[in-house]
Image (cartoon, rainbow, N blue to C red):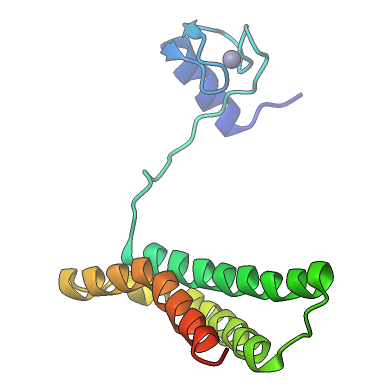
Length: 151
Ligand SMILES: [Zn+2]
């Protein structure tokens, strides 16, 4: 079987490698195969971008978590219907559904802006990141108080 350039580069790298296996952490030293001798995991040379928590990611987290808050609260209304026979109150359910649709559309829109968001300045980045962190708390309180005030 013909080896690819990546396999050849990996083998050349591994012949000089002295460190842990990325799969099982056992010590590898100057091995002559792209398989870990302990766990059998395949080893491949790659360039990796280190993880960076960006404002775009924090805002995405806020959108997804806010959808989760809505789904959780909707679940409580349906659980009350199931276990206590409470009627489904559409004045409480409808805002949750509308918000889920709005946040989902926002998530699609925000996903398309991820390249644009990389060029944001530090101030805007911090503001958007903070807004993302606070978004689930904000929407939880809006829905909670809309529920409490219309009991
Ligand atoms: Zn291993």
